[in-house]
Length: 94
Image 1 (cartoon, rainbow, N blue to C red):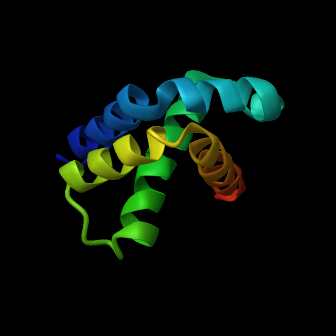
Image 2: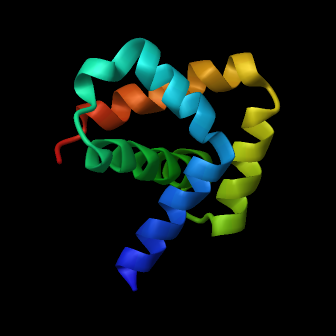
């Protein structure tokens, strides 16, 4: 069950802001990402950070999707926030 939930979160982030994440990784964090596992770990971490920091651990999947969609509509702010989330994800132990 937990693996399915994790997969769902990864897919949500990928579908909603995956292009922004990929662009930022290519531009700033390419040396730190060595595999698909690393990339998926970042996507999961972004969803987890949204759930934890924005919704105080009380978010549903729809809440995460809605937040990321609203964030995406403000692309310059989204890049700044997502870049911060990527850097936090890279600092987390595996």
